[in-house]
Image 1 (cartoon, helix red, strand yellow):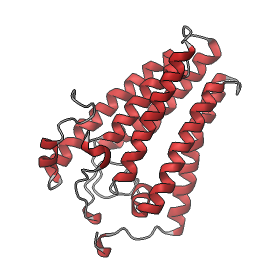
Image 2 (cartoon, one colour):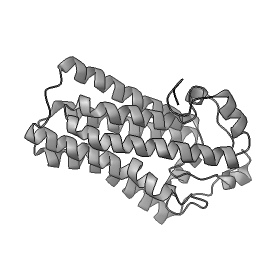
Image 3 (cartoon, rainbow, N blue to C red):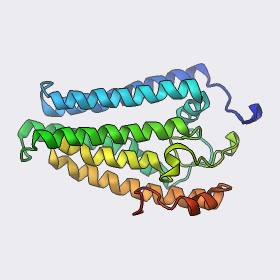
Length: 239
């Protein structure tokens, strides 16, 4: 990318605001989960928190080294030009409200023992699926330097179609990873009632995928031909 197309550095106050917001976002889910559970004596929940922190912090550290402009882009999501109106609610559902609802309901389920027992082997298998989902999302973020927090065409950054890494398999691998993790997490935490908010979040992810895919087909040069080669949007061979 030409230097003139790169994002300008964040102002100090913007950087501080973004860093504080990111830290609060990162801690909010675990805090709400343990508060709703009424206990911190929940080993599988601590494993989940460890995976969440490793994936979130690890991905940012890798991207900081490889594509620091990506982090600048994500930090400006509130003021980014060209954000689609339909994404303002969807990004809140899939990025904040959905994940928070899942862990809060999981915590309440754990506190009051609403769900039937999930075999230990099934919990471990679900944990592996969650880890795989996070890994897929991290891979997508590292591979795609235009990995924005909101749906927009980044003309200011000279956006191009990304076809490498997991984008060879599906057109929206990060959403695929989020879908896997959110639907497996209730089984990992032995909190099956949290499948209700997880299902709502999965539906919102599917809607966002379809709308974003249509936006890219219509507005990003080269995406239509990429979509014809890579047929699946979210689930290989299915959709």
